[in-house]
Image 1 (tube, one colour):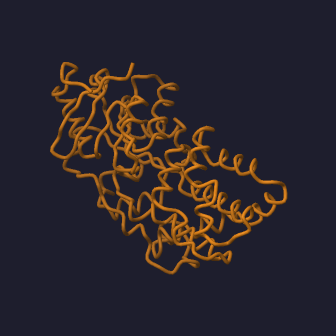
Image 2 (cartoon, rainbow, N blue to C red):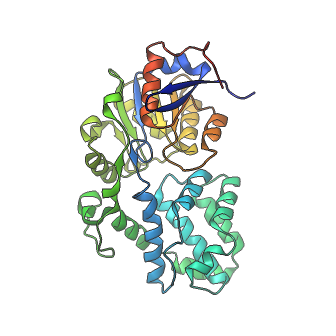
Image 3 (cartoon, rainbow, N blue to C red):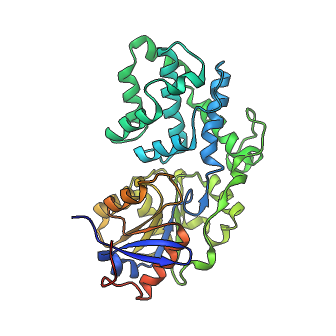
Length: 343
């Protein structure tokens, strides 16, 4: 039987509230936010970095026609497959795929290889079926390649250089502040400057403790929040990043976050199936009544995402973080009750 949701309209978007979760949501003491796709719109920044990094990386290998190797839709496909909360690992995966196809089809023409099988759509579907993550992607390519092909692929799978290209493309002149080094490969303004804030701070519920749990590094997070005008709302001691040694869907990410903001019951606001899995794993490890989940639809551009979140049993599903905050306040104020119309 599918979960029963209450439909709630707000002035800033629509929400669905899981009927059986209303009381739990009303009793939370804090809210923990993801960053990309939740607090900050990254459609014109991090999503475009993948395509630009691919063009730069494969151009250095002597390829041609590489400008459309990785689209924002391709990035979303990897995110939906699961286990790619790190954009660097996501980049390592598509690089591996293209190196395999280059060797198999004896081509360095990006436009030609884009259409060759396995396509990114086929590759990510297989990754999802096998459980997601970069190690799974490696296993798939290793299984497709023969020994000579795999040797050739490994010799050109330069993850350090690719990560450097990715960092410089994203940060540009802010590289010293974010990563501690001067850019040397990419001579252009960083796409991080095209981040756009989503959260309207005026809609944050009064009296709740606020924190962040993100796959960004500490530098990326601090600079991103500053550029978005959110730095004062999220002090560094209330933020968990990749630098803390855990990656979603590892529930330790949320355990550390809830400990840092100093509360017992919180809500995590994310935008991917992995974010919901993180909450579910946290509940398995620490008790079902200690972490509610809110999933927003501003991250992945996938028409079936709302249904995916419903099937996963998200406690609250919202068009955006602002609608989520309005729904949260309605739950806290007693304006949402199980007697209302449900989906």
